[in-house]
Amino acid sequence: MRLGLKLCGLVICAATGCSDDGVVAADAESGANTSGASTDDGELTATASDSAPTTDPTGLPGGSTGGLTDTAGPGESGDTSDESTGDTGPTRGVLPDPVPKSGVAYVAHFLANDLRWYRTDGDAPATGGSIDLGAITHDLALDDVNDRIVVAQDVAQRVVLYGLDRPDGPEDAVEDPLELGALDISTAPRFVRVDPYHERLYIVADDTAGGTGMMLLHTIDTTDPTNPAVLSTVTIPATTSLDVDGPRRLMVLFHGATDEVFAYDVTGDEPAQIGDPIDLREPYPEENNTAFSARSLTLDPWHARLYAARSQSALSELIVMNYPDALPGEGQSYADVAEFSLEAIADPFDLSVDISERPGILDAFTPLPSPEDFLVFLTAGAWNGTVPSGTLVTMSDESGEGPLMLETGCEDHEGFGCFIQDYAGGAPIAFLQTDGAACRDWTHGVVVTTGLATPEDEPGQVMFFQYEDDGATAPWLAEGGNLPAAAFPIGALCH
Image (cartoon, rainbow, N blue to C red; front, side, top):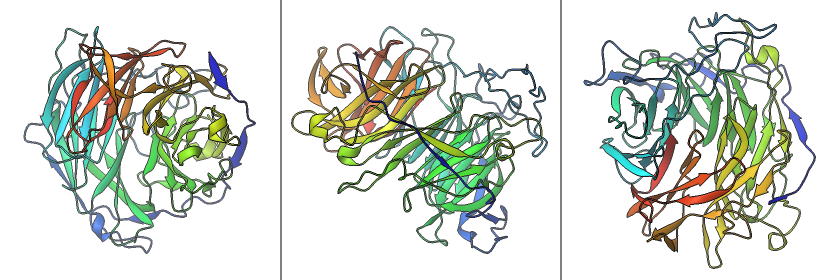
């Protein structure tokens, strides 16, 4: 059963002729500004871990090749070299194959130093192990091509790269993550993103010199993760929501102060803005007494789609937008082959109707698409009859052209959705709040969600769901219950 509403798409184009506006270049070593705005507080120092390997910089044994295709279609280049930077990446003009999930989910915490991992490849979810990161975590990023995880520690002002083990199957034990290298930063790192195909790490950090409206973007070469090299430091509009399309070398961010989307070409060592910013309120104009926010912006390179969680109380929904799917050829950048634009695709929630008369949610956190299908999950907040509770919502787009349809899921909330709950003996005993930390293991058909404790400095929980190809979803319990997390799980990544 599906519940859905068809709406017309809306295309918004970024004007051409604005390649660098909003990006201020800086000298990566001295912090000296080449364009006028100070970036002195953005100095980075790379350090290699004492335990890091000296001969194999790719991480632990068993690393994936990333499934890169070595054949080109008609009119496509088979050259894997990038003439602008000299590095190696996916065949230009050809999308790489998605990397299968290994069946291990990692969870980090905002009020504890733990990095914990869980198995999603067995007959039931299982605890894998944990390490002490030495500081609390603000953000995580996964490089599944090179089997690495990146941890941003804002309080410690440090970004750390770890190599990950890739088990051969459920019976194969997972080795502890191995610290490879680190970057000490003079301002707090808030967010990290990776382009695994070109081994680039992007760090968004506070800009104490530029004011509250700007942040620093550090571009790092991680070809040798034991010695990450700073390529550039620029200023960008302040953001809490951004992502990178690695095959297209495209970065997109949401600037909450103006509700605009900025796009950047990151082919070179310094990002270059593509066109003018796009007003996200044009296709999403509805107003209430809650501020508009687009959380957890996510780019799906295989479908050329942008997802974000619209958090606006009763106007919350899933933002879904197509962007041009052109792939750069040899010696080209994305800006050479496409004019960046966004086409809105309707989700199932008709905001023109009062929430009392339609299916709806009261908050939205994290979209979870897959490169292998058009099934999308969203961690959200929904009314449980007493208070809003953590919820997993399932949507699908069978045609690949929209609109998205609402799948019944567990049917916990108004005939759809799955509440994130505490369990005992296989039965739900309490509703849980969530901060949205979640991930999706599409290889094994598992969604990993997290629940917060009350008070929040007490241990949280990790709740698992299994799903079928048609979106049918059900709780997946470990001996009748969830598995424990540490205090305030803030990030989850399925490797």
